[in-house]
Length: 173
Ligand SMILES: CC(C)(COP(=O)(O)OP(=O)(O)OC[C@H]1O[C@@H](n2cnc3c(N)ncnc32)[C@H](O)[C@@H]1OP(=O)(O)O)[C@@H](O)C(=O)NCCC(=O)NCCS
Image: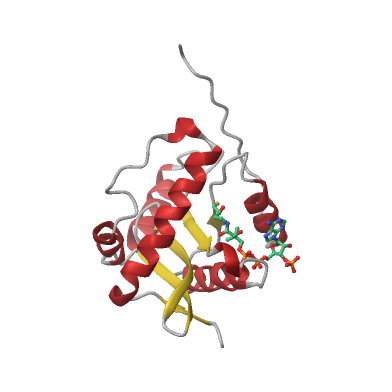
Protein backbone atom coordinates (compact mmCIF):
# COMPACT_ATOMS: atom_id res chain seq x y z
CA UNK A 1 0.00 0.00 0.00
CA UNK A 2 1.13 3.52 -0.86
CA UNK A 3 3.09 5.51 1.72
CA UNK A 4 2.07 9.16 1.97
CA UNK A 5 4.33 11.89 3.35
CA UNK A 6 2.32 14.84 4.69
CA UNK A 7 2.13 17.46 7.41
CA UNK A 8 1.20 15.97 10.76
CA UNK A 9 -2.11 16.97 12.32
CA UNK A 10 -3.55 16.73 15.83
CA UNK A 11 -5.06 13.36 14.85
CA UNK A 12 -1.51 12.04 14.33
CA UNK A 13 -0.36 12.91 17.86
CA UNK A 14 -0.88 9.41 19.34
CA UNK A 15 1.10 7.81 16.48
CA UNK A 16 3.86 10.43 16.60
CA UNK A 17 4.05 10.09 20.38
CA UNK A 18 4.71 6.33 20.18
CA UNK A 19 7.57 6.90 17.72
CA UNK A 20 8.93 9.91 19.64
CA UNK A 21 9.16 7.75 22.78
CA UNK A 22 10.99 5.06 20.81
CA UNK A 23 13.43 7.71 19.57
CA UNK A 24 14.05 8.90 23.15
CA UNK A 25 14.63 5.30 24.33
CA UNK A 26 16.96 4.63 21.37
CA UNK A 27 19.07 7.72 22.03
CA UNK A 28 19.13 6.98 25.77
CA UNK A 29 20.36 3.43 25.05
CA UNK A 30 23.22 4.93 23.03
CA UNK A 31 24.19 7.48 25.66
CA UNK A 32 23.01 6.97 29.24
CA UNK A 33 24.43 10.36 30.25
CA UNK A 34 21.85 12.34 28.30
CA UNK A 35 19.23 12.08 31.03
CA UNK A 36 16.55 9.61 32.04
CA UNK A 37 13.44 9.77 29.84
CA UNK A 38 10.57 11.29 31.79
CA UNK A 39 6.87 10.34 31.38
CA UNK A 40 6.36 13.79 29.89
CA UNK A 41 8.99 13.45 27.14
CA UNK A 42 7.37 12.41 23.89
CA UNK A 43 3.88 12.32 25.45
CA UNK A 44 0.82 13.06 23.33
CA UNK A 45 0.24 16.25 25.33
CA UNK A 46 3.79 17.40 24.65
CA UNK A 47 3.52 16.65 20.90
CA UNK A 48 0.21 18.55 20.78
CA UNK A 49 1.83 21.51 22.55
CA UNK A 50 4.75 21.55 20.13
CA UNK A 51 2.39 21.28 17.15
CA UNK A 52 0.57 24.43 18.23
CA UNK A 53 3.82 26.43 17.86
CA UNK A 54 3.87 28.08 14.40
CA UNK A 55 7.66 27.69 14.36
CA UNK A 56 7.39 23.90 14.56
CA UNK A 57 6.01 21.50 12.02
CA UNK A 58 5.68 17.73 12.09
CA UNK A 59 5.74 15.57 8.97
CA UNK A 60 4.45 12.04 8.98
CA UNK A 61 4.79 8.98 6.81
CA UNK A 62 1.40 7.30 6.72
CA UNK A 63 0.32 3.94 5.40
CA UNK A 64 -3.33 2.90 5.62
CA UNK A 65 -3.98 5.40 8.40
CA UNK A 66 -0.99 4.34 10.52
CA UNK A 67 1.93 6.67 11.29
CA UNK A 68 5.09 4.69 10.43
CA UNK A 69 7.57 7.56 10.58
CA UNK A 70 7.84 11.22 11.47
CA UNK A 71 10.17 14.19 11.30
CA UNK A 72 9.97 17.39 13.30
CA UNK A 73 11.25 20.68 11.88
CA UNK A 74 11.81 23.83 13.94
CA UNK A 75 12.59 27.39 12.96
CA UNK A 76 15.52 28.09 15.22
CA UNK A 77 16.80 31.45 16.39
CA UNK A 78 13.71 33.65 16.36
CA UNK A 79 10.91 34.29 13.92
CA UNK A 80 11.53 35.75 10.49
CA UNK A 81 10.83 39.33 11.58
CA UNK A 82 13.18 38.89 14.56
CA UNK A 83 15.94 37.59 12.35
CA UNK A 84 15.50 40.46 9.88
CA UNK A 85 15.70 43.05 12.67
CA UNK A 86 18.78 41.37 14.11
CA UNK A 87 20.47 41.47 10.71
CA UNK A 88 19.66 45.18 10.33
CA UNK A 89 21.00 45.94 13.83
CA UNK A 90 24.14 43.86 13.19
CA UNK A 91 24.67 45.76 9.95
CA UNK A 92 24.14 49.20 11.52
CA UNK A 93 26.28 48.55 14.59
CA UNK A 94 28.85 46.56 12.60
CA UNK A 95 28.60 43.93 15.27
CA UNK A 96 31.06 41.12 14.55
CA UNK A 97 29.47 37.98 13.24
CA UNK A 98 29.59 34.94 15.47
CA UNK A 99 32.00 32.25 14.30
CA UNK A 100 29.16 29.84 14.27
CA UNK A 101 25.53 30.83 14.13
CA UNK A 102 23.01 28.16 14.95
CA UNK A 103 20.03 30.10 13.67
CA UNK A 104 18.23 28.51 10.77
CA UNK A 105 16.19 25.38 10.51
CA UNK A 106 16.62 22.46 12.86
CA UNK A 107 15.39 18.89 12.49
CA UNK A 108 15.47 17.81 16.14
CA UNK A 109 13.70 14.51 15.63
CA UNK A 110 13.26 11.91 12.92
CA UNK A 111 12.20 8.32 13.41
CA UNK A 112 11.09 5.55 11.07
CA UNK A 113 9.55 2.36 12.50
CA UNK A 114 12.25 -0.33 12.57
CA UNK A 115 10.41 -2.65 10.15
CA UNK A 116 10.07 0.16 7.58
CA UNK A 117 13.68 1.32 7.38
CA UNK A 118 15.86 1.31 4.29
CA UNK A 119 12.98 2.07 1.92
CA UNK A 120 13.57 5.80 1.51
CA UNK A 121 10.99 6.98 4.07
CA UNK A 122 13.56 8.84 6.19
CA UNK A 123 14.85 10.61 3.09
CA UNK A 124 11.33 11.64 2.02
CA UNK A 125 10.56 12.92 5.53
CA UNK A 126 13.77 14.96 5.76
CA UNK A 127 13.13 16.40 2.29
CA UNK A 128 9.61 17.45 3.30
CA UNK A 129 11.05 19.17 6.39
CA UNK A 130 13.73 20.90 4.30
CA UNK A 131 11.17 22.11 1.76
CA UNK A 132 9.06 23.71 4.50
CA UNK A 133 12.10 25.39 6.08
CA UNK A 134 13.12 26.74 2.67
CA UNK A 135 9.61 28.05 2.10
CA UNK A 136 9.88 29.79 5.48
CA UNK A 137 12.86 31.73 4.12
CA UNK A 138 15.66 29.79 5.80
CA UNK A 139 18.85 28.96 3.99
CA UNK A 140 20.41 26.35 6.30
CA UNK A 141 19.28 23.35 8.26
CA UNK A 142 20.97 21.65 11.22
CA UNK A 143 20.67 18.36 13.04
CA UNK A 144 22.22 17.17 16.30
CA UNK A 145 23.37 13.57 16.20
CA UNK A 146 24.88 11.47 18.95
CA UNK A 147 28.40 10.38 18.03
CA UNK A 148 27.41 6.77 18.74
CA UNK A 149 24.41 6.91 16.40
CA UNK A 150 26.33 5.61 13.40
CA UNK A 151 23.32 4.68 11.20
CA UNK A 152 21.92 8.20 11.65
CA UNK A 153 25.31 9.79 10.89
CA UNK A 154 25.43 7.74 7.68
CA UNK A 155 21.85 8.69 6.86
CA UNK A 156 22.47 12.44 7.28
CA UNK A 157 25.76 12.23 5.44
CA UNK A 158 24.02 10.49 2.51
CA UNK A 159 21.46 13.28 2.52
CA UNK A 160 24.04 16.06 2.17
CA UNK A 161 24.66 17.01 5.83
CA UNK A 162 28.24 17.45 7.08
CA UNK A 163 29.76 18.15 10.53
CA UNK A 164 30.16 21.78 11.65
CA UNK A 165 31.03 21.54 15.35
CA UNK A 166 31.87 18.67 17.64
CA UNK A 167 30.69 18.85 21.25
CA UNK A 168 33.22 17.35 23.67
CA UNK A 169 32.05 16.11 27.05
CA UNK A 170 33.77 14.99 30.25
CA UNK A 171 32.15 13.73 33.46
CA UNK A 172 33.09 15.88 36.47
CA UNK A 173 33.24 13.33 39.24
C1 LIG B 1 17.88 7.36 10.58
C2 LIG B 1 16.53 6.87 10.03
C3 LIG B 1 15.48 7.94 10.23
C4 LIG B 1 16.68 6.59 8.52
O1 LIG B 1 15.41 6.25 8.01
P1 LIG B 1 15.25 5.26 6.76
O2 LIG B 1 13.87 5.36 6.25
O3 LIG B 1 15.75 3.92 7.13
O4 LIG B 1 16.29 5.93 5.74
P2 LIG B 1 16.26 5.87 4.13
O5 LIG B 1 15.79 4.53 3.69
O6 LIG B 1 15.56 7.06 3.60
O7 LIG B 1 17.83 6.02 3.83
C5 LIG B 1 18.36 7.01 3.00
C6 LIG B 1 19.85 6.75 2.87
O8 LIG B 1 20.51 6.91 4.13
C7 LIG B 1 21.50 5.88 4.31
N1 LIG B 1 21.13 5.04 5.45
C8 LIG B 1 19.92 4.91 6.02
N2 LIG B 1 19.97 4.05 7.05
C9 LIG B 1 21.24 3.62 7.13
C10 LIG B 1 21.92 2.72 7.98
N3 LIG B 1 21.30 2.07 8.97
N4 LIG B 1 23.24 2.51 7.77
C11 LIG B 1 23.90 3.12 6.77
N5 LIG B 1 23.30 4.00 5.92
C12 LIG B 1 22.00 4.25 6.11
C13 LIG B 1 21.52 5.07 3.04
O9 LIG B 1 22.52 5.58 2.18
C14 LIG B 1 20.14 5.32 2.45
O10 LIG B 1 20.13 5.25 1.05
P3 LIG B 1 20.11 3.83 0.26
O11 LIG B 1 19.11 2.97 0.97
O12 LIG B 1 19.71 4.23 -1.11
O13 LIG B 1 21.50 3.31 0.37
C15 LIG B 1 16.11 5.53 10.71
O14 LIG B 1 17.17 4.62 10.62
C16 LIG B 1 15.71 5.68 12.15
O15 LIG B 1 14.55 5.97 12.47
N6 LIG B 1 16.66 5.47 13.09
C17 LIG B 1 16.38 5.55 14.53
C18 LIG B 1 16.14 6.96 14.99
C19 LIG B 1 17.32 7.86 14.80
O16 LIG B 1 18.46 7.50 15.07
N7 LIG B 1 17.04 9.07 14.34
C20 LIG B 1 18.05 10.07 14.04
C21 LIG B 1 18.29 10.94 15.18
S1 LIG B 1 19.51 12.18 14.76
